[in-house]
Length: 216
Ligand code: GRF
Image 1 (cartoon, helix red, strand yellow):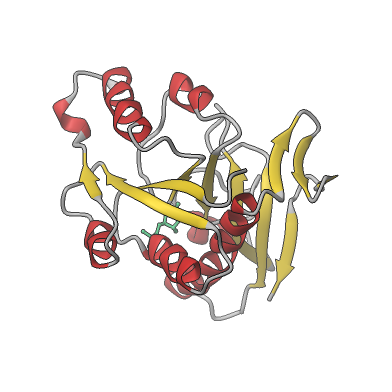
Image 2: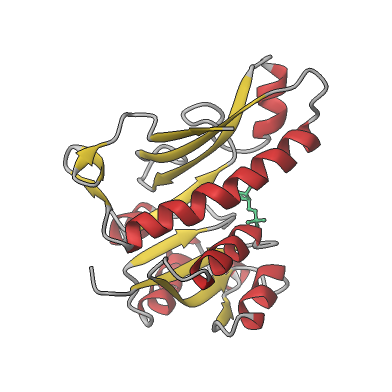
C-alpha cells in the first residue's frame, strides 16, 4: 500500500458516514484520502458535505441509462478516472452488477445496519424488534456478489432496550456506524486489512466469521 490510500466514496443520501470518514481523516492518523464522492442522486446531501470538504463531487443519474449494466459501466469509468485503492459504499442505494463487484473485488467495502448475516436488505431495525432480538448493531463487510453477504470485517453490537422503536434503534446504530466505518477504512489504508484466500485478514491473522466485534 502506498503511503496514502486513494479512496472513492459512493453515496445516495445524507452521507453521514461519509462525514464521519472525512472527520476521521482530518484527525491525522488515517492515511486514506478521498479523491471523489459519487452519487446516483444529484440532490444527495452528501455531495454538499464533500464539496464543503474540498472533495470533488459528482452525480451520475441511473435513470439516464438503459439498464443496470450500462449504468455500472459508466460508473466504473467515472470511478477509475480516480484510480482508487479502495471503494467505499456509504449508503449507496443501488444493487451492483456482478461485473462491477468483481472489478473491485478485495477493495470494495460496505456498511449495513444489522448484525449480518441477520437482516440483509431493508427495514433492519424493525425486523430486529419484531424478532425480539436482545442485540442489534451494524456491520462492515467486503462486498461480494451476494447482496449484503460478503466476508465481515467489523461489527458493533448494542443491547436492545425494552422501549426501543425502529427510530431509536436506527439512531443508536447510526452512531456506531460512524465509529466502525472510519476504523475499517483506517485499517485498510494502513495496509493492516485485506481480503485473502482464507477470508478477511487483520494484521496477517484471519478474523472470525463475525469479523472483529465491538460491544457498546
Ligand atoms: C446507513 O444506515 C448504512 O448502514 C446504510 O445506508 C445508511 C447510510 O446513511 N448502508 P448515511 O447516508 O451515511 O447517513
